Length: 233
Image 1 (cartoon, rainbow, N blue to C red):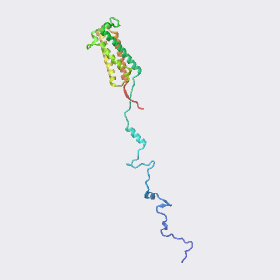
Image 2: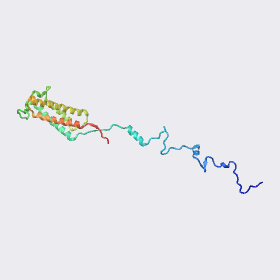
Image 3: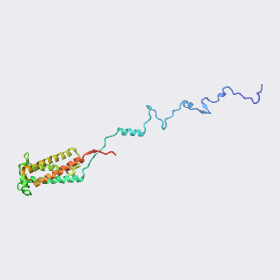
Image 4: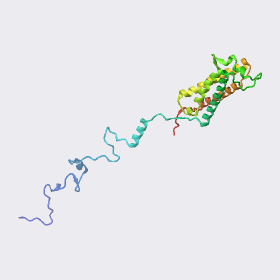
């Protein structure tokens, strides 16, 4: 057999040039080969990767809270403006004073033995006023009408009912004092221009009614006992 020359390069056998796999580089599998390997699970979306679903990612917690807040926006809460204690006791005291005078005038009207403590002069004469034809309205004694008016005012202006925010009660209080002041103006007109005398007891009731009228109208303007939208922070 012929011997090979020393230093001659030995050719690799056929197919030995492809000793490395086509899909490898330096012995490491390429990414494409790894992805194509059967049985390999696709990578899950990590942080910052959108999840599949209608082409949109899952809304964040902040977005969900924003949506919930927008969807559940309610009307602002209402607060009731409290009536001051001094106002409650002042109106109640005036109402009780008017009730006391009305009771006294009613008793004097029906009991002839009760004499009104009032001087009798050309200008001041209580008996002349209380016995005049103008002391009746629609056949009802004015003293009885005043008694009924102040019975209601003493109850409606009590501190306990001032804390009640029922709208019909508030409007009944306002309506009654408006009717009362109109009636007082009529009685003052009768004393000055028809009877020609003034009754001190009747005048005290008139003054109390004027004071109650001013206070109750002021309470309505100030919003005492009324509900208002709460101020937003």
